[in-house]
Image (cartoon, rainbow, N blue to C red):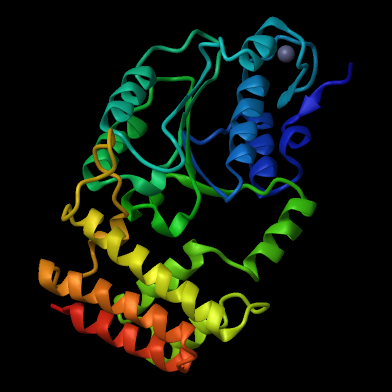
Length: 308
Ligand SMILES: [Zn+2]
């Protein structure tokens, strides 16, 4: 069987090229931030890197056989040389502890230990500090892969200390994602609202963006989606500020960027804001001009922000 390369597992993309070159030249960085929407592709890349770094087969550097005991252990998830921590959607403090203790275990000589952490988008300052300490004093033979859906959400302290690489599954998947980008989900909508709340983008520009979010949908549908995202946005702000408890079993699932936007968040105002959103949704159904409804909702949101 011919030897495999990392690109055979994930497709040829900037991340595979970067890691293959690093393996061949023995210049692997101590930590990478793998950015991309496709969680499976990032995990496949981590697995392929662990195989290539530990394969016992006879082939060139940066390749792997997929049949030796090391490759098989990695596939069976019984290898000591790769471990995946966390979840793509939230962060728990226990997981940070487990990651740190795994990362501090000495690596067997000649092995590459791949420590993977998912959901880096949800790191709080405290979690980031602890993980950074571990990353910056790595035991030899260890490489850290931090997985992110959206690099803009990753704390700058993390982003500045790791090599950021983009993971794309294949050209077909990239094309699918392009199509998805013209019908973006909540995430893109949240980004638009965040920019508005930070006063980076004007009211009229924001209304325009939200109304054109999904070009194939009507203005009414886009306005409805915009209002629903406003409710989600407010909920996320409250969670980020600790005003409503995090989801059960999760210690802190905050979005760091949301926590930095200044809002007047007394209960009566938030309650009123959400009530108004409900009424505004009805107005859209009743054929009130969607642009007007959205403009009024965003004006109310802006009145809740404070700029110190
Ligand atoms: Zn092998």
